[in-house]
Length: 299
Ligand code: HMG
Ligand code: MG
Image 1: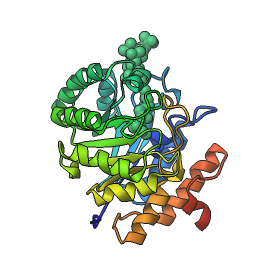
Image 2: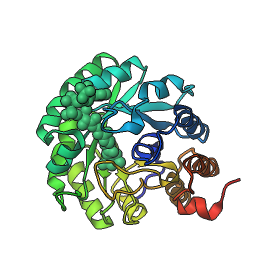
Image 3: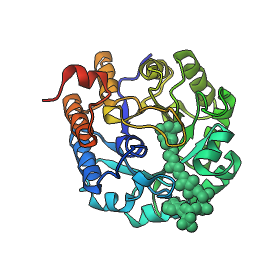
Protein backbone atom coordinates (compact mmCIF):
# COMPACT_ATOMS: atom_id res chain seq x y z
CA UNK A 1 0.00 0.00 0.00
CA UNK A 2 1.09 3.59 -0.55
CA UNK A 3 2.11 6.03 2.21
CA UNK A 4 -0.33 8.79 3.26
CA UNK A 5 2.36 11.43 3.27
CA UNK A 6 5.78 11.79 1.68
CA UNK A 7 8.67 14.08 2.56
CA UNK A 8 10.40 15.64 -0.42
CA UNK A 9 14.14 16.20 -0.04
CA UNK A 10 15.01 18.89 -2.56
CA UNK A 11 18.50 18.44 -3.99
CA UNK A 12 18.33 21.02 -6.80
CA UNK A 13 20.79 23.53 -5.35
CA UNK A 14 23.36 20.75 -4.84
CA UNK A 15 22.86 17.77 -7.17
CA UNK A 16 21.06 20.05 -9.60
CA UNK A 17 23.75 22.65 -9.93
CA UNK A 18 26.98 20.74 -9.19
CA UNK A 19 27.42 19.57 -12.75
CA UNK A 20 26.19 22.66 -14.56
CA UNK A 21 28.50 23.36 -17.48
CA UNK A 22 29.49 26.88 -18.36
CA UNK A 23 30.32 29.74 -16.05
CA UNK A 24 30.23 29.38 -12.28
CA UNK A 25 26.74 30.21 -11.05
CA UNK A 26 26.67 33.32 -8.87
CA UNK A 27 26.37 32.72 -5.13
CA UNK A 28 23.45 35.17 -5.01
CA UNK A 29 21.57 33.08 -7.60
CA UNK A 30 22.04 29.91 -5.53
CA UNK A 31 20.82 31.70 -2.41
CA UNK A 32 17.77 33.08 -4.18
CA UNK A 33 16.99 29.60 -5.54
CA UNK A 34 17.11 28.19 -2.01
CA UNK A 35 14.89 31.00 -0.67
CA UNK A 36 12.30 30.36 -3.40
CA UNK A 37 12.30 26.62 -2.68
CA UNK A 38 11.72 27.22 1.02
CA UNK A 39 8.94 29.70 0.24
CA UNK A 40 7.28 27.01 -1.92
CA UNK A 41 7.10 24.75 1.12
CA UNK A 42 10.19 22.58 0.78
CA UNK A 43 11.29 21.56 4.28
CA UNK A 44 14.56 19.81 3.36
CA UNK A 45 16.92 21.54 0.99
CA UNK A 46 20.38 20.26 0.14
CA UNK A 47 22.04 23.61 -0.29
CA UNK A 48 25.75 23.03 -0.87
CA UNK A 49 28.71 20.67 -0.96
CA UNK A 50 31.86 21.03 1.10
CA UNK A 51 33.98 19.11 -1.41
CA UNK A 52 37.19 19.92 -3.21
CA UNK A 53 36.58 22.88 -5.56
CA UNK A 54 39.07 21.26 -7.95
CA UNK A 55 36.76 18.26 -8.21
CA UNK A 56 33.46 20.16 -8.31
CA UNK A 57 34.02 23.83 -9.16
CA UNK A 58 30.30 24.76 -9.06
CA UNK A 59 30.19 23.98 -5.32
CA UNK A 60 33.26 26.06 -4.45
CA UNK A 61 31.22 28.73 -2.63
CA UNK A 62 29.55 26.39 -0.11
CA UNK A 63 30.47 28.51 2.92
CA UNK A 64 29.20 31.71 1.26
CA UNK A 65 25.95 30.04 0.21
CA UNK A 66 25.31 28.75 3.72
CA UNK A 67 26.16 32.14 5.22
CA UNK A 68 23.83 33.95 2.84
CA UNK A 69 20.67 31.93 3.47
CA UNK A 70 17.93 33.56 5.56
CA UNK A 71 16.82 30.49 7.43
CA UNK A 72 13.14 29.80 7.62
CA UNK A 73 11.96 28.05 10.80
CA UNK A 74 11.12 24.42 10.12
CA UNK A 75 13.41 24.14 7.09
CA UNK A 76 16.59 22.04 7.18
CA UNK A 77 19.43 23.24 4.94
CA UNK A 78 21.95 20.46 4.51
CA UNK A 79 25.29 19.96 2.75
CA UNK A 80 27.52 17.17 1.49
CA UNK A 81 30.70 16.49 3.44
CA UNK A 82 32.97 13.73 2.08
CA UNK A 83 35.56 13.97 4.85
CA UNK A 84 36.46 15.69 8.13
CA UNK A 85 37.71 18.76 6.34
CA UNK A 86 34.32 19.17 4.67
CA UNK A 87 32.53 18.60 7.95
CA UNK A 88 34.61 21.23 9.76
CA UNK A 89 33.74 23.70 7.00
CA UNK A 90 30.07 22.84 7.34
CA UNK A 91 30.12 23.19 11.12
CA UNK A 92 31.84 26.56 10.86
CA UNK A 93 29.10 27.62 8.44
CA UNK A 94 26.40 26.64 10.95
CA UNK A 95 25.10 23.66 8.98
CA UNK A 96 22.76 21.49 11.08
CA UNK A 97 22.67 18.45 8.80
CA UNK A 98 25.30 16.95 6.52
CA UNK A 99 25.61 13.91 4.29
CA UNK A 100 28.39 11.46 3.62
CA UNK A 101 28.30 9.71 0.27
CA UNK A 102 29.47 6.24 -0.57
CA UNK A 103 28.71 3.79 -3.34
CA UNK A 104 27.73 0.19 -3.96
CA UNK A 105 30.28 0.10 -6.79
CA UNK A 106 34.06 0.01 -6.34
CA UNK A 107 34.81 1.70 -9.65
CA UNK A 108 32.37 4.54 -9.01
CA UNK A 109 33.76 5.05 -5.50
CA UNK A 110 37.24 5.47 -6.96
CA UNK A 111 36.09 7.96 -9.61
CA UNK A 112 33.84 9.97 -7.31
CA UNK A 113 35.74 10.15 -4.03
CA UNK A 114 39.11 8.68 -4.95
CA UNK A 115 39.06 5.69 -2.59
CA UNK A 116 37.63 2.19 -2.27
CA UNK A 117 34.26 1.47 -0.68
CA UNK A 118 35.94 0.08 2.43
CA UNK A 119 38.27 3.09 2.68
CA UNK A 120 35.29 5.44 2.30
CA UNK A 121 33.45 3.77 5.17
CA UNK A 122 36.57 4.12 7.34
CA UNK A 123 36.82 7.78 6.35
CA UNK A 124 33.17 8.39 7.28
CA UNK A 125 33.53 7.03 10.83
CA UNK A 126 35.38 10.04 12.25
CA UNK A 127 32.99 12.29 10.32
CA UNK A 128 30.04 10.69 12.09
CA UNK A 129 31.84 10.89 15.44
CA UNK A 130 32.67 14.56 15.08
CA UNK A 131 29.16 15.33 13.80
CA UNK A 132 27.66 13.64 16.86
CA UNK A 133 29.82 15.85 19.13
CA UNK A 134 28.71 18.95 17.22
CA UNK A 135 25.05 17.90 17.26
CA UNK A 136 24.89 17.68 13.48
CA UNK A 137 22.66 15.04 11.92
CA UNK A 138 24.19 12.87 9.20
CA UNK A 139 22.49 11.38 6.20
CA UNK A 140 24.18 8.66 4.14
CA UNK A 141 24.05 8.23 0.39
CA UNK A 142 24.71 5.06 -1.53
CA UNK A 143 25.33 5.60 -5.24
CA UNK A 144 24.87 3.14 -8.09
CA UNK A 145 22.15 1.14 -6.33
CA UNK A 146 20.56 0.16 -9.66
CA UNK A 147 23.59 0.16 -11.92
CA UNK A 148 27.04 1.63 -12.35
CA UNK A 149 28.44 3.51 -15.34
CA UNK A 150 31.66 1.48 -15.04
CA UNK A 151 30.60 -1.91 -13.61
CA UNK A 152 27.10 -2.34 -15.03
CA UNK A 153 24.81 -4.38 -12.79
CA UNK A 154 25.09 -4.06 -9.03
CA UNK A 155 23.89 -6.79 -6.68
CA UNK A 156 21.13 -5.75 -4.22
CA UNK A 157 23.16 -7.55 -1.51
CA UNK A 158 26.03 -5.10 -2.06
CA UNK A 159 23.65 -2.15 -1.75
CA UNK A 160 22.26 -3.63 1.46
CA UNK A 161 25.76 -4.17 2.87
CA UNK A 162 26.93 -0.59 2.28
CA UNK A 163 23.60 0.83 3.48
CA UNK A 164 23.81 -1.19 6.67
CA UNK A 165 27.35 0.04 7.32
CA UNK A 166 26.18 3.66 7.01
CA UNK A 167 23.18 3.03 9.22
CA UNK A 168 25.27 1.21 11.86
CA UNK A 169 27.67 4.15 11.86
CA UNK A 170 24.83 6.46 12.83
CA UNK A 171 23.34 7.86 9.62
CA UNK A 172 19.75 8.72 10.49
CA UNK A 173 18.61 8.02 6.93
CA UNK A 174 20.14 6.25 3.95
CA UNK A 175 19.36 7.63 0.51
CA UNK A 176 19.51 5.10 -2.29
CA UNK A 177 20.91 6.65 -5.45
CA UNK A 178 20.10 5.44 -8.93
CA UNK A 179 22.94 7.63 -10.11
CA UNK A 180 22.58 6.89 -13.82
CA UNK A 181 18.84 6.25 -13.91
CA UNK A 182 19.06 2.79 -15.46
CA UNK A 183 16.75 1.17 -12.91
CA UNK A 184 13.31 -0.23 -13.68
CA UNK A 185 10.46 -0.85 -11.21
CA UNK A 186 11.01 -4.53 -10.52
CA UNK A 187 14.73 -4.05 -9.93
CA UNK A 188 14.01 -1.03 -7.72
CA UNK A 189 11.51 -3.01 -5.68
CA UNK A 190 13.92 -5.94 -5.21
CA UNK A 191 16.73 -3.61 -4.23
CA UNK A 192 14.57 -1.88 -1.59
CA UNK A 193 13.39 -5.27 -0.31
CA UNK A 194 17.02 -6.32 0.15
CA UNK A 195 18.00 -3.11 1.94
CA UNK A 196 14.93 -3.06 4.17
CA UNK A 197 15.87 -6.47 5.55
CA UNK A 198 18.80 -4.60 7.15
CA UNK A 199 17.35 -1.14 7.86
CA UNK A 200 13.78 -0.05 8.67
CA UNK A 201 12.24 1.18 5.42
CA UNK A 202 11.18 4.38 7.22
CA UNK A 203 14.88 5.28 7.40
CA UNK A 204 15.41 4.95 3.65
CA UNK A 205 15.02 7.51 0.89
CA UNK A 206 14.81 7.11 -2.89
CA UNK A 207 17.21 9.27 -4.91
CA UNK A 208 16.45 8.54 -8.54
CA UNK A 209 17.87 10.16 -11.63
CA UNK A 210 15.63 10.21 -14.70
CA UNK A 211 18.14 9.47 -17.45
CA UNK A 212 16.07 6.64 -18.92
CA UNK A 213 12.68 8.15 -18.06
CA UNK A 214 11.96 5.49 -15.43
CA UNK A 215 12.17 7.54 -12.25
CA UNK A 216 8.43 8.06 -11.61
CA UNK A 217 7.64 4.41 -12.26
CA UNK A 218 10.48 3.40 -9.95
CA UNK A 219 9.26 5.78 -7.26
CA UNK A 220 5.76 4.32 -7.43
CA UNK A 221 7.24 0.84 -7.04
CA UNK A 222 9.33 1.73 -4.00
CA UNK A 223 6.53 3.71 -2.33
CA UNK A 224 4.58 0.47 -2.45
CA UNK A 225 7.50 -1.04 -0.54
CA UNK A 226 7.15 1.65 2.15
CA UNK A 227 9.52 4.41 1.03
CA UNK A 228 8.28 7.80 2.32
CA UNK A 229 11.20 10.10 1.53
CA UNK A 230 11.92 11.16 -2.04
CA UNK A 231 14.91 13.15 -3.30
CA UNK A 232 14.17 15.32 -6.32
CA UNK A 233 15.42 18.45 -8.05
CA UNK A 234 13.27 21.33 -9.20
CA UNK A 235 13.19 21.61 -13.01
CA UNK A 236 14.87 18.20 -13.22
CA UNK A 237 18.26 19.85 -12.85
CA UNK A 238 21.32 17.81 -12.30
CA UNK A 239 23.69 15.00 -12.91
CA UNK A 240 26.84 13.72 -11.33
CA UNK A 241 30.21 14.85 -12.68
CA UNK A 242 31.59 11.34 -12.17
CA UNK A 243 28.75 9.53 -13.93
CA UNK A 244 28.95 10.34 -17.62
CA UNK A 245 25.54 10.54 -19.24
CA UNK A 246 23.71 10.88 -15.93
CA UNK A 247 20.95 13.37 -16.61
CA UNK A 248 18.98 15.24 -14.03
CA UNK A 249 17.35 14.08 -10.87
CA UNK A 250 13.67 13.29 -11.16
CA UNK A 251 11.91 16.67 -11.29
CA UNK A 252 10.26 17.84 -8.07
CA UNK A 253 7.31 19.14 -10.11
CA UNK A 254 6.72 15.71 -11.67
CA UNK A 255 6.95 13.96 -8.29
CA UNK A 256 4.53 16.47 -6.73
CA UNK A 257 2.03 15.98 -9.55
CA UNK A 258 2.23 12.21 -9.13
CA UNK A 259 1.77 12.46 -5.36
CA UNK A 260 -1.14 14.89 -5.64
CA UNK A 261 -2.87 12.49 -8.02
CA UNK A 262 -2.38 9.69 -5.52
CA UNK A 263 -3.77 11.81 -2.67
CA UNK A 264 -0.41 11.75 -0.85
CA UNK A 265 0.31 14.88 1.21
CA UNK A 266 3.57 16.84 0.99
CA UNK A 267 2.68 20.37 2.13
CA UNK A 268 4.41 21.81 -0.94
CA UNK A 269 2.86 24.26 -3.40
CA UNK A 270 3.27 22.72 -6.87
CA UNK A 271 2.74 25.95 -8.80
CA UNK A 272 5.32 27.75 -6.67
CA UNK A 273 7.83 24.99 -7.46
CA UNK A 274 6.99 25.23 -11.17
CA UNK A 275 7.57 28.98 -11.08
CA UNK A 276 10.87 28.47 -9.24
CA UNK A 277 11.92 25.96 -11.89
CA UNK A 278 11.21 28.47 -14.67
CA UNK A 279 13.12 31.12 -12.76
CA UNK A 280 16.28 29.04 -12.12
CA UNK A 281 16.40 27.60 -15.65
CA UNK A 282 15.99 31.11 -17.11
CA UNK A 283 19.06 32.06 -15.05
CA UNK A 284 20.84 29.10 -16.70
CA UNK A 285 19.55 29.99 -20.16
CA UNK A 286 17.09 27.17 -20.78
CA UNK A 287 13.66 25.71 -19.94
CA UNK A 288 12.79 23.27 -17.14
CA UNK A 289 13.03 19.60 -18.10
CA UNK A 290 9.99 18.77 -15.94
CA UNK A 291 7.11 17.66 -18.17
CA UNK A 292 4.59 18.96 -15.64
CA UNK A 293 6.28 22.37 -15.65
CA UNK A 294 6.26 22.49 -19.45
CA UNK A 295 2.59 21.47 -19.58
CA UNK A 296 1.31 23.80 -16.89
CA UNK A 297 3.54 26.79 -17.59
CA UNK A 298 4.66 29.52 -15.29
CA UNK A 299 2.31 32.11 -13.72
P1 HMG B 1 41.52 13.37 -2.75
O1 HMG B 1 42.29 14.01 -3.83
O2 HMG B 1 41.61 11.89 -2.58
O3 HMG B 1 41.74 14.00 -1.32
O4 HMG B 1 39.98 13.76 -2.94
P2 HMG B 1 42.92 14.74 -0.64
O5 HMG B 1 42.63 14.69 0.81
O6 HMG B 1 44.22 14.21 -1.14
O7 HMG B 1 42.75 16.25 -1.11
C1 HMG B 1 42.99 16.69 -2.44
C2 HMG B 1 42.81 18.20 -2.51
O8 HMG B 1 41.47 18.55 -2.18
C3 HMG B 1 43.67 18.95 -1.52
O9 HMG B 1 43.93 20.22 -2.09
C4 HMG B 1 42.77 19.12 -0.34
O10 HMG B 1 43.11 20.20 0.45
C5 HMG B 1 41.45 19.36 -1.01
P3 HMG B 1 45.32 20.56 -2.83
O11 HMG B 1 46.37 20.22 -1.83
O12 HMG B 1 45.36 19.65 -4.05
O13 HMG B 1 45.19 22.01 -3.17
N1 HMG B 1 40.30 18.93 -0.20
C6 HMG B 1 39.21 19.69 0.04
N2 HMG B 1 38.90 20.96 -0.30
C7 HMG B 1 37.71 21.43 0.11
N3 HMG B 1 36.84 20.72 0.85
C8 HMG B 1 37.12 19.47 1.22
C9 HMG B 1 38.36 18.91 0.81
N4 HMG B 1 38.92 17.71 0.99
C10 HMG B 1 40.10 17.74 0.38
N5 HMG B 1 36.24 18.77 1.94
C11 HMG B 1 37.75 14.16 -2.11
C12 HMG B 1 38.97 13.27 -2.07
C13 HMG B 1 36.64 13.42 -1.43
C14 HMG B 1 38.06 15.46 -1.39
C15 HMG B 1 37.43 14.46 -3.59
O14 HMG B 1 37.38 13.26 -4.28
C16 HMG B 1 36.12 15.17 -3.76
O15 HMG B 1 35.97 16.34 -3.37
N6 HMG B 1 35.13 14.51 -4.35
C17 HMG B 1 33.80 15.10 -4.48
C18 HMG B 1 33.05 14.40 -5.54
C19 HMG B 1 31.65 14.95 -5.58
O16 HMG B 1 31.31 15.95 -4.98
N7 HMG B 1 30.81 14.27 -6.38
C20 HMG B 1 29.44 14.66 -6.53
C21 HMG B 1 28.62 14.40 -5.32
S1 HMG B 1 28.13 12.71 -5.13
C22 HMG B 1 26.74 12.55 -6.13
O17 HMG B 1 26.39 13.45 -6.87
C23 HMG B 1 25.88 11.32 -6.00
C24 HMG B 1 24.62 11.56 -5.18
O18 HMG B 1 23.82 12.58 -5.76
C25 HMG B 1 23.79 10.27 -5.09
C26 HMG B 1 23.57 9.61 -6.45
O19 HMG B 1 22.97 10.25 -7.34
O20 HMG B 1 23.99 8.45 -6.57
C27 HMG B 1 24.94 11.99 -3.74
MG1 MG C 1 22.46 12.29 -7.38
